[in-house]
Image (cartoon, rainbow, N blue to C red; front, side):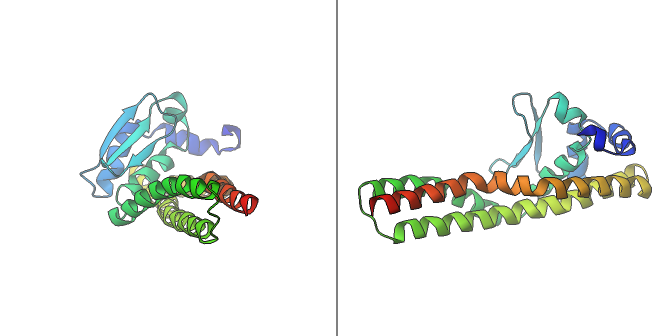
Length: 201
């Protein structure tokens, strides 16, 4: 994939500080002085956990050297300043959805085949996906702006526009796969609940 990336973008990102410093600098730009940043050698991808207000950064070769690291870190930093209410709702709905899946499956397997059961489960899944998409699309969109602003301050506007253009191009390419990764398991569970319902009816 690196061969398709503008070499100028790679050269610019190579001049950016290490990921830990980068995350802290972006948080400071976002006026966020409360979120903690931790390096983790055991994870493959970086992520933000709102429960303890911490960004966990993957510390491996790909995470430390890939040109997209700036955009990915900006994405997690943006999560840290999103509405805590929406994040709580996302957390609660995600957990309810998993528990509800088990409950609905058990009820249906007991041959209590009420149509309302798969309908309720489907609605909960769709609502949980909607909330998750609100959080993720907000972070995706703003990660480009944050990255552009960061490069503009560190280097110049030409470099910033070049980096932002490359990030936008790659986001467009990867967005369908990202949406699929977020929703595939949930839609599989919806399908399974409906299959059980139809089978035992």
